[in-house]
Amino acid sequence: MAKWGKCDIKQLKELRRRLYQFEEADKERICTDVAKNIASRLLKMAKERTPEDTGALLASWDIENKQLTVVRKGNCFEITITNSMSYADYVEFGHRTRERKDGKRTLVEGKKMLTVPEEELRRVAPQIIERRIKRELRKVFKGE
Image (cartoon, rainbow, N blue to C red; front, side, top):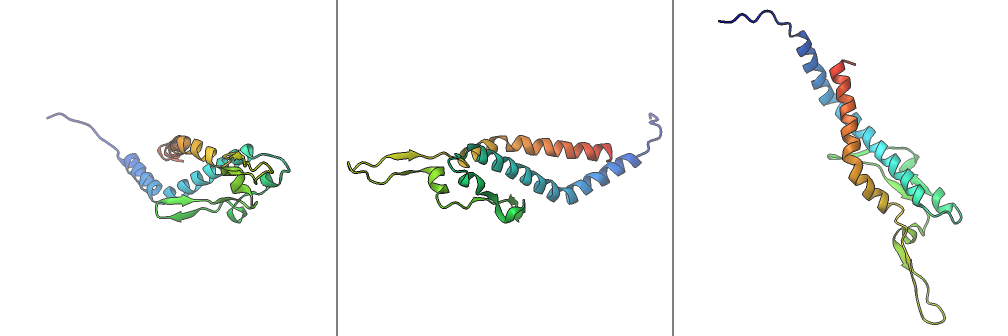
């Protein structure tokens, strides 16, 4: 029979403890932080796509209750982004103009101020989340 020598498993036990602690305590914090990060990016991108005729529409972008408050609904973490201008939907999705003297109405295309950034972020969100989790796991394995 081979002789294996001595083995100190204190470090493995410490790693197991840190991983358990990470799984239990940090999961909620990480998800909340990632949700705030994505919401901040979305708000910034929406503002960049907003037309600046008077600046009122641009200034009306806001995050509900002026803070990055994350609401957890089951496995979802939500932050509500709003625009309080009454005509924001018309600029976002487009509209028809009033009937002219010649009886014609024209279609004004929507600017998709929030729709396009939302689609872009849906594509990159997995990478944002993955980078954050890797950063957090590096801390666990380094013992920080």
